[in-house]
Image (cartoon, rainbow, N blue to C red; front, side):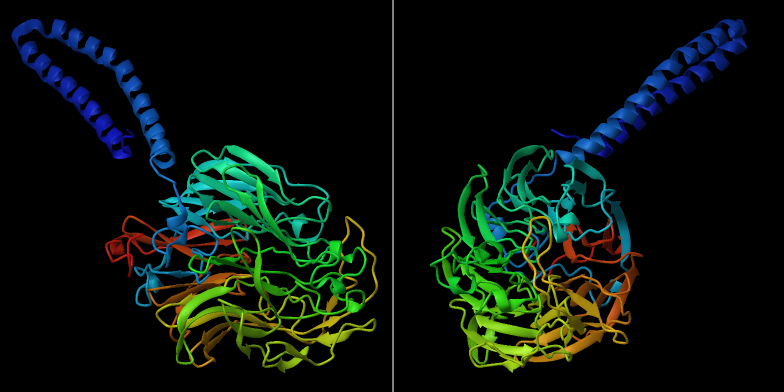
Length: 606
């Protein structure tokens, strides 16, 4: 049994008091006896005893320091239990633990924790900061299980004491040389958890399985081979007994897929290719060997509905990006939302947001699963704010298109969305001379996380107003090079503008818009809580909290670094924490200690 730190502290104090009391008693005795004429003898005896005690005191002092150090280590690393089974992964909404990239399978990023609320959030303060020394650019969302936090940075994984930020263990692997595009930045967005195992993707598309208790490597599986342009930047999604993974490289001429890996053995269970092979449905868009270079990568984790037993996963743009002449037709299954059977990988249905994409409008944004009354009827919805500038509402049982709402002013690639959900083209496309296209290359929104609050029934996400000049030039594929078929440029005199938006599903209108004051850009997402708050990273290096009902700004903390990650929340004991990655640091915040006794959760204590 592990003894708490305070036990060892009190033991040491008691031992020192015992020695002190014994010495004081002997000193008093020497003074009494000395008055009777034997002072010299007794004084020598006391001095001898005092000298004899000095080594014992020194030994006891060193022993106590060692006991305190050992007890602090063992209490953090061994007394915490990590055992996340299917029921914990499927639990919703989020309580004390944050068990996956989006917190739970729905992608809502809604926390039931309410100790931090609109009335006291102004008192929020930084509790600790952890610095990851191997990167300057974190995109991770921390995962927290029973007070233990797991974060990734490049090919490194860390377990931290979520109360103090102290490192418990660290796994490291060298970054891979010779990668291209996003993979060459060695980005990583976090871990998946299954029982007492941790899973992470590496920059060169390996899946690693680590022991959650020690960080020791259990197995290493390469899951993308045959093309050196493959990479991985995502966090895995654990469903049942499998780990779902995808790759980056959609701009680099690879063939996208979603793969399921057995969580115990590391063996592949199934694989769904997002670019049809010759003879398959949709293959007419991919003449010759182009299907091997068509993109459609799966570089963000999807969501999962256990009741429907369906995975929802987005795919990226087609390749080459800006020259669509070599890939006629719709270019399935790029820019799609895929509904897959988690047991077999069978495609149940798909919805394509941007057929024959010429603008790099990936559909990798989170497909958020929402159960609500929609137009007078209870519906199981999947909601996605897409990079192309429209917010889509679909029936998630069958993929039926229900609605699309434009959410940016600067949009010229399409004039609208028809009754089937297909865009009405405006015939704007890249040219050799250059064409002004809105939204720009970064999209009207992007991979940074949206959220949905069950109390306000509002859907929160960040948008970007920007146009850019798109160019087109034929390009042949070559390993080790990107496959854009030219690129984009900033338009002189035009400034970008970001907003935090709150969309009301019941009215299909925006409840409020919160403009960002900086013309910089961040990839910081959102998280919302039962305390009536929305947390997000703004464009001025600050972590902010606004009122979830009105959008009124309530608190901010300047991290001094660009934010490319999305926030999360967790609880330990009687304290709620909010955490976010900024630059190369993880920040964790809580209310002052005097407020720790407030209620932590509006729901259960999970």
